[in-house]
Image (cartoon, rainbow, N blue to C red; front, side, top):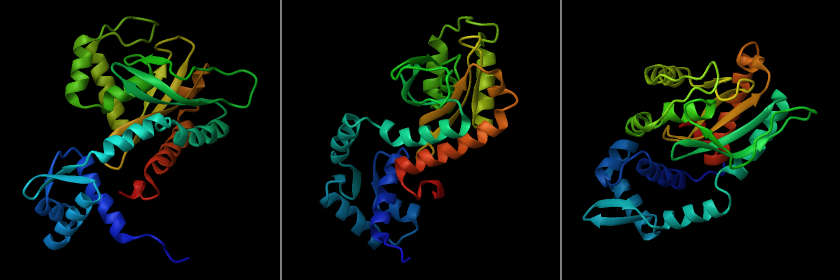
Length: 257
C-alpha cells in the first residue's frame, strides 16, 4: 500500500518539536542545522508556521511558539488529558498480566492516578481515579522523582519528610537518591511493600518524542511475586505497553524518533 504521509507536514512538526525539547526561541539557522535542511527551506517553513499561528516572530528572524498551543492544550485538558488515549493500553495490559494496572501524572509532590484497568478475576487490589501516591515510597512516585529535572528533584528532597510506613520504606535521603539513580539506569521502579506492607508494584515511564517523561504505567497487587518471580515477564509486558502508550499519545513515528 502506497504511503499517504505528507513529508512537508511531518517536517513542520519536527520543527515544532524542537521547541518542545526545551528551546524557548529559534532562528532559521538553528532549525536548518538541527534538521539538516538548507536555510531557504528553514525560512519558508518558519514563516508558513507563523502565518498559520503556530509560531510568532518576537524579533527579526527569531521565532517562539504561538498562543494557539495554549488554546489547544486547554481543549485537550477539558477532554480528559492523556487518560482516554491510555485507557485501551491499560485494558490490554490488565488482560495480559492478570493484575490491576494504572497510569499516573505528577502533581506537586505526589503521583496521581489518572486511569486504571482491573483484571478479570474475583479478587484484586483496586485504586480510585484521582488517588494521590507519596513520591518516596511508591513505584510511580519514585519513577517520577528519578526522571524529573535535577532542580525539582532536589527541591523535593530538601522539603520531604521520609516517614517510616513499613519495614521496607526508604527513610534515608542518601539511600533514596541511590534508589533513584538505579531507577534511571534500569528504567523501572519497584514498590516492595514500602507504603503498605501487602501491596507490590512495578512501574515504567512513558516518554514523549523528546525524552521527557509524561506518564507512568504500572502493574500492582497483593502478591509479592510481582516484584520477585514474575518481575521479568511483567517488565516485558509493561515496556511493550509503554511503547504502545507513546504511540497512542504521539503517533506511529514516536518510537522511531
